[in-house]
Image 1 (cartoon, rainbow, N blue to C red):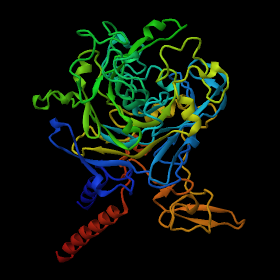
Image 2: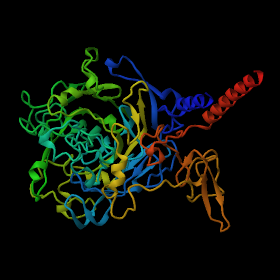
Image 3: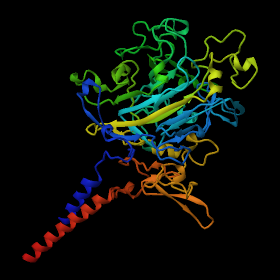
Image 4: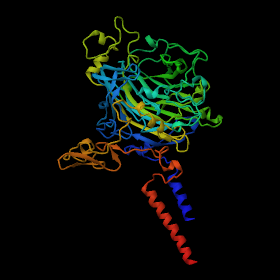
Length: 594
């Protein structure tokens, strides 16, 4: 009986998934640790904070191995006709409590493998910028994500492409091998028409890498915003047939499979039955008629046509103003998963999942899962999604359309004196770039979930949608040839510091100040940081982070049937020991009385 009670105690305290604060920034104000959903059908349900980053500690950097939550890419981007090289030095936190993504007109010589054209190349990129990812570190499934942002550059000068978005963990953006046949699939059911196009088809009953038989997998994309600045007004030029002009925000759900027939053409409004029904647009918002998606095809391989497919960009544009580039504004996404239960009429279709976008707490766009399922069989995202923050540049985004007369629009170099290198830029772009590096500033990122919703989970590999074994089994898809592995281990301490610096200041020189780390000098008089238990990174500027519940731990003796107690806090260990001791004492006394 004593052993049974002890086992019961362990079960209660150690086996129940918890909604803890392992990813929560201690700088998050108490009043911001809960939020109420804006979705009327959820009747004001309360959501609790599960991840936050306030970016209040100045001098943070995010190079691979420096931060438990984020990784700043340091590699070329071969996607979307990108003009920039992602440089990890162009992401940092400033003295005002912001994450900064900086963009500069500076050259990078690149000798490496082109993932798109599958060949080694020697090219020069004439711009540097930053991309921050939480890939395979922090992911979440369902909930609310919110941020406050100051857009980069000038509202009326085109050329920059700031974005804040989510992607399924099976695909790592810019690592093209990881996204082939994976992006942006949301089809979970078997559809034999797409069995070869979707790498992880629902028609496959194999259970490799922990995948569930008969469940299709992929890496869908949710764009919380992609912003296009510029001077072109609605009802003119490329926006002739829409009432939204530049600058605008695109809110999009990118999914596959897309509609394979009776599609609207770019630049034209959809006709009856040509697009997804029952999508609700909010204030100052209109369907994005300029882009409906891609035809993804494979060339030069036997049977390639069976691997070709449409991916759709279900996208709406929201009008922005100069103020969005001059002051901070709030952007929010609410994401609900399909319930898997019979439709509840009181939910008005929300049981099929939903995506709702808000700007400054006002609804701009609402989609329900049944809109996709009834057309292509797709769903709202069911994959664990990671967060991406970046500024890109591309001749396909905000650059002159059509190309100016006498210009081939193939070379783009603001530091050149050759007209061929300058003629394809938007008006005023190079002047802006050469005057001052534009800065995309983010005040915070916060993620909330409903602890009463069984579908809401934190983790990049969850029971319903595991990813760990596949990623570990295919590391080359998620790294460059120069990387030893996709992500480096996080360095805890060891960064250079100043032993004479005022420790009351929180910065890299002081190892985070009094409460985060100390600067020590060794026998060779070399000063380096030693981090306290809850802080990490070379200079102790980042809070330790981990999932509150390990859904998919590495292989252990548990795989052969033994399940020991999971990780728990010292408080609970002491409490369990005390209760066990009390029970034993009671039984011992009863035995002596008899």
